[in-house]
Length: 107
Image (tube, rainbow, N blue to C red; front, side, top):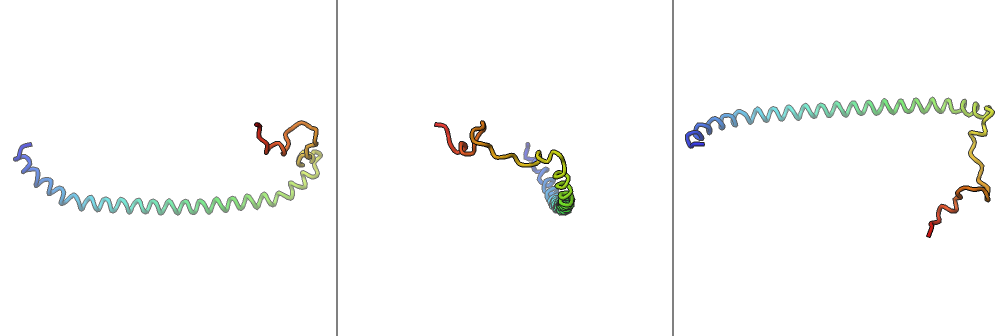
């Protein structure tokens, strides 16, 4: 670049910087205000969604608790009620792992 060319570019750059900085500042200010509003709306949506989910879970729990007594009565009256009971403790002499062997390690 020649010195004459630099002398002509200096006023152009000064004018652009003088009028461009306020425009850039306003743009940045508005941009961050918009992002702040988006975050507020997003947090409000998450809050209401969480409350809706919580109420749904509570409704499901109440329905399950209401049906629980009916289910117990049906299970008790079914001919295969022994299938719903816990297994009997293991007899000594039958194959299978015992709880006493779990703590031991092989050497």
